[in-house]
Image (tube, rainbow, N blue to C red; front, side, top):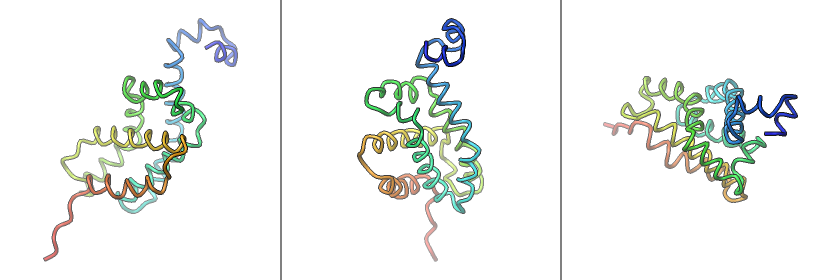
Length: 169
């Protein structure tokens, strides 16, 4: 907090008026960075012609962005997994941010009949958030590959959310 106060040229007391502790400061910093990137992320997702491709490529793009972001690297490092867990579960910020990005896209696909009508979109956004954090953590730790993750999304997530194809005939 002292470093932040110094960089902002304000007192620690002033910083504490806005952020109660280090964790809330980091969570808000991550949220601000994520919101700044939502417009380009939506544009990237929109360029894919099907909801299947939008999900696969959009999630993978979010993972790649997370891997490039030094703040996200910090959060998914083994020494900070408690903070990442707080971001994901306690604060709900990761799910909130994922919902801000994905819910309009998913709702439009659901209304068009491209996603199952019975899906709880909030729960789906939570699952996407967890998948992204898990993948970033694994890739940041040197295990797994983005191509393997992409294939897992195609194989498991996509079939579970798109309506079953009607039999020919």
